[in-house]
Image (cartoon, rainbow, N blue to C red; front, side, top):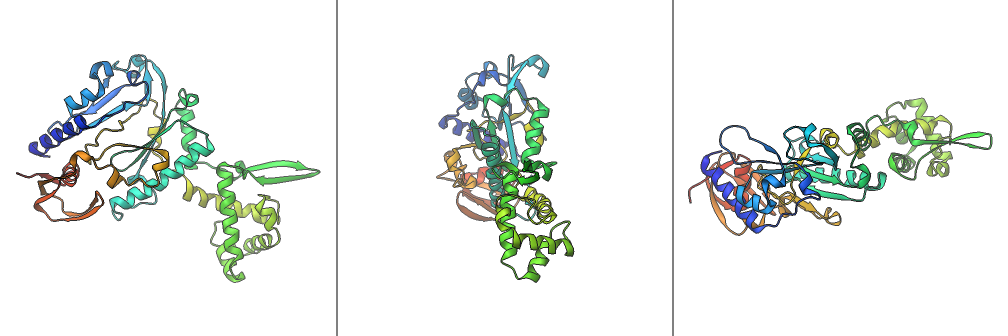
Length: 386
């Protein structure tokens, strides 16, 4: 990035912070703060181990320093500005979840557009929230668009603040479906002299597998027998003979299957549940970034700040507004709207931003400022002369 580009972005970031009120997180004085300035040369320099006593009022700091990136810690400390983690004296931490569009198993970054990647990431976010709200019963959640490739969820329920890394890893394993054992989804009880095994259909992974089972049963029942047998054999561990057993169990025991009864039709339904569990985990897990959640000292982006790699705002999103949220429209800062600037495009191509589609050619161009800031922040353009 050329010095003229860097100076322009730093100045306009400062203009944004003079216009934009930024709300600090709860217990802001107990958290470590860090930021990356607009320094020259290769790489980036992180300034960290700061407290609000060091930085001063957060809005004044942002206006004065105009940083490229701003972070605060998930952890709270007795001495947040101490230079070592041990000396900080950890008091507790939020649980942070990070979803990155570049790391989703359903996304191929070289083939998907930026908008498509972010749409896939929102789907993963909604699955994550289903786990956090329905399975764990968390209530104090803050959802944030990261300003670039994904979403963060901050969980601040009192009961989880003192969880150590291993306990946080168990949460990670659950929402990712790691090591999920179908036997753990089953309730065993005595009914008279008979042992009954039923899926735990009231919630959690058991409910998800049961819903998939019923959907699969509907699909198989609607097919001619030959096609139904072929469909059953697409599942792992179900060959021709097992398919006949399962198909017979489905035809004879639909009501029992709806109740989650795994004894209906002998071992056929149990085998079907085992086969479907892997598919359900693949389709419905939340592919979060494990190191972020397990790290009690993690630094995370400040909502309301600007992302120095995109020029977009790190946006806090109301829970009931997630479905309608359009990151490439709603996270465009108003500061950069309403006028054009000159840029020199160094990486041409298509861009979707601000509700419009642009096809950029290499060389000098006049573009809306929000697009120019985006291109310069991402290293696709330099500031042109006015």
